[in-house]
Length: 233
Image (cartoon, rainbow, N blue to C red):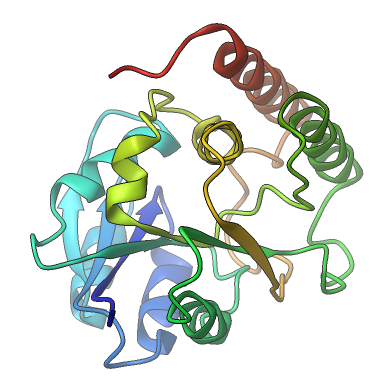
């Protein structure tokens, strides 16, 4: 079955990078490229529109909230949805490899793993690496499914996304997606992906120790919540 893809890019104050990112997304593979402006105070929306993206405004802050709002604007004809960050740390060319793997029609989700390919020095902090290690180990212990990373770049079938019943609207969005996928025994594979140091701006998660700590707590709580709370019918 040939897939029709949309790409969702949540963005908060990323005017310096978002235009370059959108212009380097390979043309012709996405029916929609949606930038969700998550309450930016700079020119993120203007720059995104000028670069050719469809811009959706979501003033309610939260990574998961921005992703969820983007999903609501995906065309009915789209059968699979990709996600990536706006900071240009991910390589848009890796999307092509991920979609090629997805087109094998054997997978419900394909993840871009930053740690399967050596990330650029300084792109992942020690705290991020430890959080990745701990979270993926917990998922393996609970659901016996092994991941190497909780990276933002991924593509998932639209019908599978609906089954995941995602409720987190913060930084727990990505780990909830993977934990629920493991719980439901969805077919998931990882593809090595490049990861670069942020050139412009500051990370909303790893930019401060407090931000990293809060994100880490949220991620661990999300895994616990997936264990406790059943999926909604």
